[in-house]
Length: 286
Image 1 (cartoon, rainbow, N blue to C red):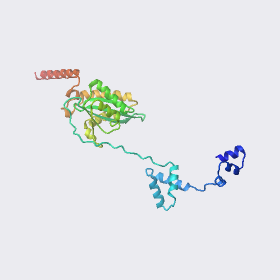
Image 2: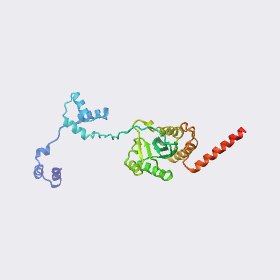
Image 3: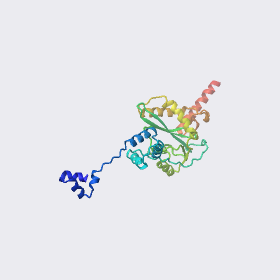
Image 4: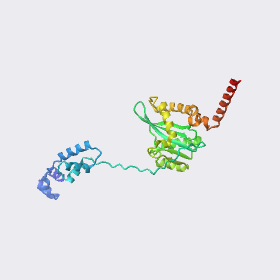
């Protein structure tokens, strides 16, 4: 480049320009005669056939075909073609211990949480956060959003904390939101123990899995949604009906609110309904 610059703007000869920058004339006139076209074509073919393999296998296959190209040359072309694969490091989880799935004897002892995925009618992906109380299987939160990072998860739990308090334990899987530092630190701050299930063992979180099945059958698989607001409105209506009217066989065919009410007005409402049913049964007998 410097020789070309001197020749063009200072009108000196090639010999003079080379002496000025201490370059031999043979280097100036030298032209690389190496043609890497065959190597490029071969690497392109191998990359198309084996996109997940790396340079070592490509070079071994080249040698097995009898091509005597130098390893350094093939590697140079391989790098120039930007075929180098990014090595993915698998995140190692701590050992998860299997824990028995037992229903607590009172509310706010253990909550179960899980995420569900679906798509809107326009193809946008959405996620739904489900939280239930293991004691009476009450749905505490059914919240839909286009994305649900750990920050949004903590905000939902903070809102529940203000409304009904917090549990001693939270049972969940090993999803990135549940293993994030933000969520783990928040649980430590509020003295909540996280009960992680073993990877690939969803039935260790069986209460929320059964809840997810009902929700998917009744809502996600039953309707098309144009936006999150439509889904959230239906989810709120469904949650109210589930908590107040859905009979659980494990709860003696009672709904979550009937089995163990959370608020005083619910207790009064149940007592009133029981009195009315007893009064009607006495009338029928008489």
